[in-house]
Image (cartoon, rainbow, N blue to C red):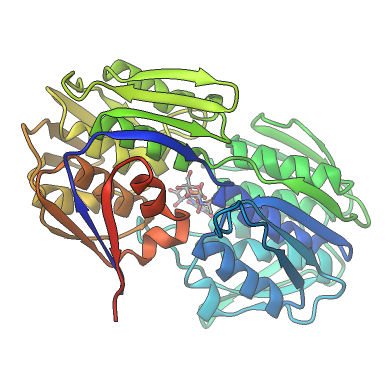
Length: 431
Ligand code: UD1
């Protein structure tokens, strides 16, 4: 397994082009199951989760074509993919693929809506909590499906098709909102989703579905009204910029000091993160196609309290990164996680670098350390892994992050992007 070696303490200066959003691209790709025409997506990120989903879709009978658009230096940034599900040859999503990535379970609603049946493995993904599927299942049952759990699979049937229903989510769930939104587009009648997630990735999905002929009201709100259609058509769509990648590199500039311009993105997608960075003493300037984040390495980072919330609140996917920043603040910070129950797995690893963190239930009290010191650490999940990279940029000496395959699930050419700004970072190929 590959590892990443960082020699920290160097300020970062330069430009980073932000990739398309993984968490938007995944449901957009799944939406191809709703039509027999071609859905073409551009600005596709080149990360492992996308390849995993291509494999899954292909084994359902989807024809996938990747049009490698070189960005001039041989990399695959900005690739486009065409997906055509002329017919669905299998309605089963096997354990071997879905266990690698929770988003694989999103095929449940679309397969059921189009084919009247689906057998989908219970999902895997990052081990950050129990991550149940009850909201997906309850919603599809309210739409007339009959679902059993058998041998680790969700086995669903709706022989007479799905019917529109009024569904109120007890918890805000990105995945359940996406799953039911897609299913409702082909259901008979009107579906109302109340307390729906409002994440920008949902808005991206609403826009693609609308381009495919779906009738959806309430874009960007927590109440979506979907009038089901007998069929949908193909469409061309550009994946939105990755707001989590944007925020992660903004924190890289903050923790290492220096000045990084982030392009091909939109500062308004991460307003909640930028508010915290500004309060911490980091300078943020919006530009036409992104933002510039800078900090004089001599000026201190202030401790700021952070609580994760559904959008537009502070994203849980940026919690580990802000914790890394707070470990080197001049002060203290209380970081509270409200979305997942087990999302502090980076804490013991950050502690190995000299961080001072005490966890009490859902909150972590971080007292700024004078200096982090490089060590060997282990990547545990996607965002935890990147928090260790960020801490390594600030630590003195050498930090080696082992088991970085989680990083490759969600960050495109991370070490190249950071090295281009002056970081001393190197991937060491594993056996
Ligand atoms: C998505 C993102 C993930 C992000 C998360 C929250 C993708 C591919 N992943 O994950 O990066 O961290 O949103 O912003 O887009 N829940 C239930 N029952 C369900 C479904 C969810 O109780 O049926 C709970 C979860 O355990 C969690 C909360 O709802 O506590 C939010 O989870 P959810 O928004 O569904 O996360 P994902 O869609 O899996």
